Length: 515
Image 1 (tube, rainbow, N blue to C red):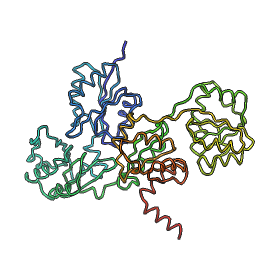
Image 2: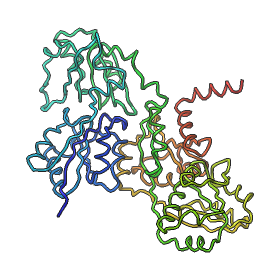
Image 3: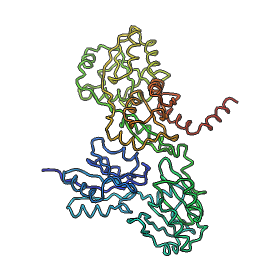
Image 4: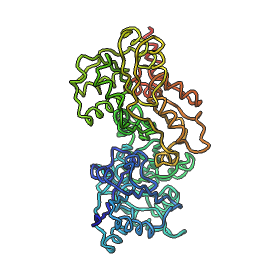
């Protein structure tokens, strides 16, 4: 019997990944099919399971990829195939999101569904911009409207009634209508000195907040070329922004960072960057695939034909011990063997298995590791455990030094397909703007990322933050703007991003040190 399918209507919030609900995150992780809107944040779309079918259904002003009726037909069709379907909508599904219509269609078709409300942009975007929609002694109510017009020329708003309201007015989908809304309220008798605000691209990189008296707002918005998506607010609470704004104080505010390492390892880098205020989009440019067989490895282990193991990445540690477990061999087979690692992240991954590295170079790269092994292990039989696509320099250097080394390929590093979902997501999110940085943790991530670039996109527009010189070399070969972390570690990459975001602060600190 086929599994009964279902649909979950999920509100994705205003765009910031941290504002996606736990329920929404869980539903997305289990989805077989995801139908998503244009305004869903890139960081949230990157959470879609790799195996899921992902269908863009538009919902951008003036450009609907699919009509509403077709979206509803697809929801029913995919659920009847026995699939877990997520309908991912910006903000909240039931606040001008047409989620009610979709629920009606599902009920009529007999398809099980649930609704996971989202953090509505009507309240969260102003809050993140330092504007509380209600405030004691200032505004005791909040009123939310859509400025979207179903028919050209027909304004759905009754400005006489709106001007008489005493609370905060919030207009969604209203950037195009700012002049008419402002003029309508003024004509209806609202004071021209009433504080007002427009928030463009709220909670994500590129956010702009514009405040002005109601009578000046439309002209100021046109002068500043405020674009969509945006929210218009009118009311006394808008005057609180100057004292309550907080996001701008975060050191990576309004920066968009792309993390390109494999999905299983991106969170350790993405998390700290988000805490510092950046919009982080995890777009893996490579994936790791364990190799089967490994007959050469088992033969070496059974014959005890090695003295030292060398790991060049945390992934190598994981792959090695996963292979041991599947072979039903345990760490007692490694008794007395020395272990070398390329850096602290690899050492930490080893410690999780109850083992500690005997040596690690002071500089965390292939050349330094080769120098260290040549110095400390000239007579050792070395077992080099890494990716089949690993840097050939290490193996070559050890052989030239007369060291007996066996290079074992535990896994393959594969590049994303040019037509993959992540490639399409990158095309939507990457702008090549001054506030964007792409973080690379290996030469492979650089090469994979370049394969994903949209046709015609010039790599010279990319500001590349690289973990070490081998990675930087690969980025320079692609003509990228390269910035290298002081040390080959995630912590140092975060520090480098902070330096790039605040170059004057770094120069000031350097002058203080020199003095």
